[in-house]
Image (cartoon, rainbow, N blue to C red; front, side):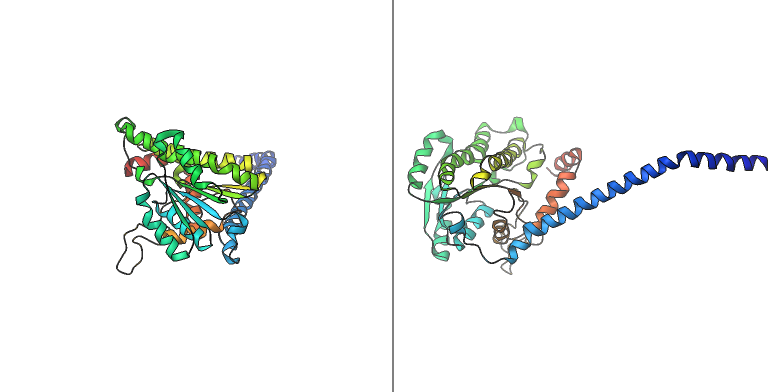
Length: 318
């Protein structure tokens, strides 16, 4: 009996001495929970403000807000092509730049016929270095360029060991994804700065925030577009120039099902024109976005995923 009383007495003494620590931990836990709740509420507000509220507003006059012409590089890609069509729907003239003009000729014709805007084709092979710039400058002379849209070449997104990567493909990755976007931005940006308005949109990939084994060069090129966009935003944003890093995930493929819809289209894989309409609604609101709210959820999960888990998953899938 004495032993039991001694145990209870000892327990009360320990509880009394630890009471201040328990209260401190409770306060810390309350602050942590409150901070996480505030962060979650902030993220929800940003998601609604970026992806839903602009969709409820009336159509903006993009020509008046940014300019009369849009330069599109990479229109052979589904997102860039849909982006060009959406800009044309708002009355913006389209200039398509490609190393093979025949590959986008049908796109230019379809845009002109569907939306009644002017379209211009410019053939430019950036593997020739800065010599190609004179051809582009001549084509853009006396045109008010309001938009520049650069897109990565997804045809280069092929899993392959870096040492097995052919030198030609490595140069293509650098020239098409890095050199082209950099030179075009350098050509177009001075005119935008002079007028005090314009938008540069660099379309890379939602995977740009993680290194991807067996896709080292391509992964690095998407990260380059993301970083240069963000840097230019801080450099020229206060001068009226919107520089946006667009980091999408997948869109539906071009294979059409029996119902006429694009195969694979759905909640996470929107049709290109649906994605483009959402993405353009974010112009002027965010300088870095996925452009589509389900993709924002994917991007959020990817950011918080441990790097070892991402690398392990990509090695298994590729």
